[in-house]
Image 1: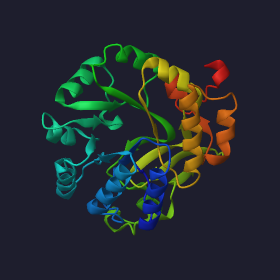
Image 2: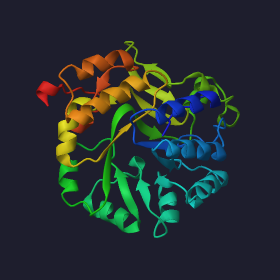
Image 3: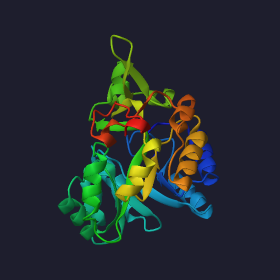
Image 4: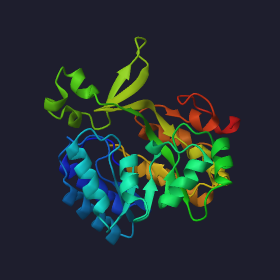
Length: 293
């Protein structure tokens, strides 16, 4: 789902572009901060119906961090909707969906072993999203024991969501209280970059969420993703050039592999340098080039 806070018209325009793009599945909803109010639940449902009419599968995502009774009420409202598939991003949502309807087990549920994966499938998960930190050899081993009929999705492009906090880092940057933040994160459509003292890109703050500054990009790893048994690749939205990113991955998935210069060709369209370290069992900010993979 969209990680950032964008203006209402921008969000509608973005998803209209998605309706005309080669993507098959679109995740919708506010998954980061409940104070963001540009779109209401009825707006997300309108977008979902528009995408469904364009032949896409629309999925409604729940929030990762529930901090109040109103957050819980919003989660209940989402999981009660039976029109669209739900992505559960916390165990409260899983509890409300278990045994009642199919759902997607989101990446923040941290499913790292076969027993947990089997448990999620028993509760009703028909798809799960691999945790960002998992390396491809561990995923391949896990998928050898995958329950029948359970799809596997991998976060393949975008700044990595590393942590969620009860504190709002964007509000703190502006010396504002969280409950009177002025919604300043809308001024940063791709998050707010943090640098080290040496002026190197380090992290990105996005409200209560901390992201990697570097952009996780697995386009050169599509052969190993396919060999491991991955069914779906997740591309995280960014404010510019998303059509170019989608086109590159679409071309690679159709041929089964990216050309040797695919990553280099994508770099002008990425907000920062690429990384893929986690997939190769290395520090997440590392980049393992195709020739070394």
